[in-house]
Image 1: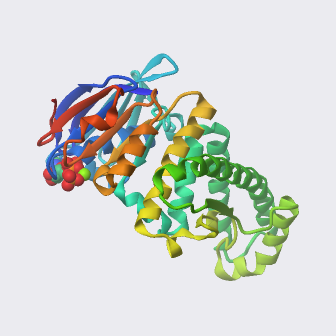
Image 2 (image 1 turned 90 degrees about the horizontal axis):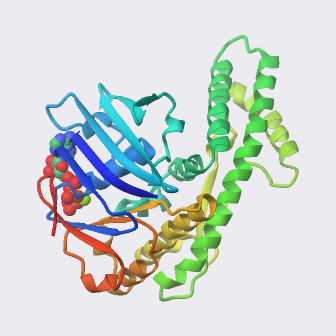
Length: 362
Ligand SMILES: Nc1ncnc2c1ncn2[C@@H]1O[C@H](COP(=O)(O)OP(=O)(O)OP(=O)(O)O)[C@@H](O)[C@H]1O
Ligand SMILES: [Mg+2]
């Protein structure tokens, strides 16, 4: 997959800019602090995920004093071009593929498939389970329509169930029916999440030694609220057991909306035992491992966005990272220092300088 053209209008500190990018090429952006490097990465990420990785306030993406912003992209996927556009006005997103409006977010997310690696990713290990679930869900949503549909069906059932539990004269039969339907969805979601985590770790494990001097073993486990064997019966039993508690607390106390992924270093949770360097190596392996899974499932690499990560890597890791970037993958790298050209050897690479919301090839 490639981003061939990007147009930003009133996006953060970009007034109106249009840039062309060569496919399967590494694009390096450097510039001083606060010039618009992360903003550019954020724009590409937003086109991919329909949300920012650094704010949940959508209005902060629009340039100060302006009423709206838009992002347009010409992407190439499996040899075909597609034109995507997002207009944000009054906190609402309006989506278009070519000129046609797209109503459902799920029909737009992942059309541009991008993976981000940024310094804040280190927080993934210590943040709440919710952010880890969201990470997995986002990736699965980009890969599978069935997953997206099942997850959104489950979420609406969960809302209904919680609403019902808040009523004084509880309809037991309706509660039972909703629970039965939730269990069906949960079986699909649990098995897809677990399968995805396993495949992801199988790939990441192969890459980890390139980024770490030590010989640690990395792994991750998907933790759900019941035992795996006889999943359906166990889910039923768990809901029957929690029935009284749910009524008392007036909400659904168990379910996949509480699940977690635990990342392990030599069998122990990495957030408890890992050094900064080990966490960074783990993340590098995870991000490239993810790119590999996406390649195997979709037969093309996603776009890789590396925001400000070079400065945090020692020269050995920088070199290893570049050497392990698949040749057909388009990559966008930002840094405050120009990156040494020698690292790239015979890779196709372009360098740009970013200043005050504008970029210039150098
Ligand atoms: N909504 C907005 N309207 C106008 N300017 C904005 C808006 N949001 C952010 N900015 C400006 O964008 C700049 C920050 O851009 P960005 O985060 O991309 O910096 P950067 O080049 O990545 O810097 P660093 O090297 O420090 O990470 C700041 O000057 C900030 O004032
Ligand atoms: Mg930045």
